[in-house]
Image 1 (cartoon, helix red, strand yellow):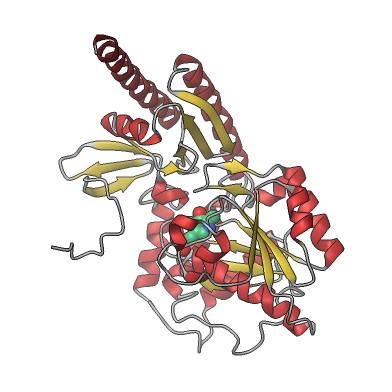
Image 2: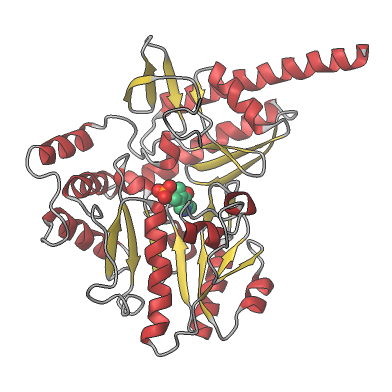
Length: 402
Ligand SMILES: *Cc1c(COP(=O)(O)O)cnc(C)c1O
């Protein structure tokens, strides 16, 4: 009999009752170190007092209004993000995929508004993840996610991640823009070099294309800058944001320059919930903390300390860990055993982390973890790797006996 919840997820059989910072507690009071953080969502951990206060205060006033009306929290959030980024304007959504949908529509509409409606193709990268709507699975082009869902949406050309010559070769008279994650999350915590991003910026300028960044996972402080592209010293024309911006409340946004947004005129796009007062109150509260003096410097320092411990871990367990990847607190351990084995061993040590492609275990802690969490992570990872080594030795003995 089918589960009352559509069985599309492979869920861990744990029930968490409450969270506090980087820790999750089960009903039986067991404590887990949460380096999943809702997959890079809970940037300030669980039950952050400032976020709880913002949400509960707003809950007592107005939950929902509709975009028929002005929403003060949204106006404030938009002004703050305009001040903090390249963007002149933005559209609020409830998810990352919707932010990408807006980005894709905007890029096509831009060229339409310029009298070039044939320019509607977007160059995207192998290994990308942009969401699970029909347009975003088509944008990413991952066969596993497209299979069985009928024809992919046309208009996407896929090239290898980081391959500038392939990008150049893919640019044609119908190209509208280039869409890239500065750091691929699901794809295995793979970083495009900052030089590559600068090259893409140059190509877009040269050919009149829109540079579209998917910073749904790598944005909002995750790499130690508010947005990852800042490391490259470039700005995009359009950027999709979600995950961290809501700190656990569903919020997304499609940010754009005035020029890129020029086709998105009255009535061209909309969302019932996008920018809803509850969401805006939480996103403003997240921004209060993430943009506070010294916060991002702290993330960079934390990332450096964690990375150093991970290097030590790799040295201690060369049969388990092949490589440490990533930027800031978007980190990946490429493993020599199946990544699921390390994740299971970590869970046995009461530590939670998600997988990624390329046999990678992602480490996505809240951005505000302290030394205690770094130490706990090292100890749990060390113990998990030791478990795996014991298993490998046992398998070796069995193998020799057989
Ligand atoms: C999670 C993710 C998305 C999709 O976001 P949803 O909120 O699940 O729709 C898109 N792009 C990237 C890079 C992501 O990590």
